[in-house]
Image (cartoon, rainbow, N blue to C red):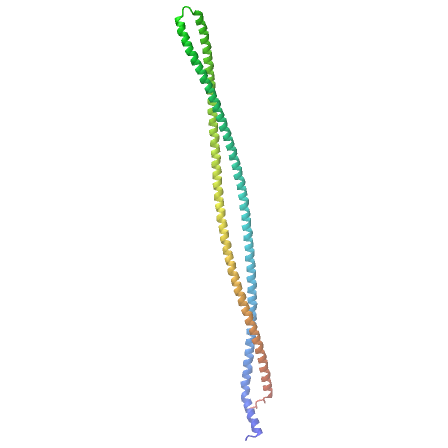
Length: 299
């Protein structure tokens, strides 16, 4: 059975053999601790970079929101301009309609004047026809008288003088009829002149209505252009909504990833804290062991 001295001698030899191994373990633990500290620093730097990236994304999102607000203001301004243009065009159309109504009233008044003139001329023509019938009757009566006069030529000289006087009166009346017919011709010429003027005015009305049609066509084209521009604005706004939805989805995913990173960093902090505690304990134990070990004998 070994003695106490032999046991101590064997323990000293064993500790002398274990001392380099323990020194290596302490060195490796120091290296592991340094690597762990570097890993923690890298992790903190990554956290700062992620925070900075998050802030930059927030700034970009604010810029995008500001641009979207500006686009909305521009769209509202375009809508107000469109409403004002519609009001102005409606007013112009109402004015054109009022002018057209006035032209129609003038045309109706001219038609009434023309109808009245025709009626007056018809009445005068009927009067002329009645007078001509009377003259025909008088002429027939004169013919009968002339036949009687031919039978009584020799005895009716004085009566022939009366007949001559009556014929002179008839000539005078026929001259009056010719004068009235000339006046009627002049009045018909005036009627033709007024009808020509009415045709000219109707042509002017047609020309102005054609201009109104052209302006209305131009208004329709402008409305079509405005509708096309509004469709483009709607399309761009739809694309912006889609992009904002995609940005929101990406931000949600980034928030989820940031939460996962925070969770993992929290776990790593806890794990590193445990490792620091265990390494502190191991260093304390190694210090105690190194203190208790005897120094290696000089060779």
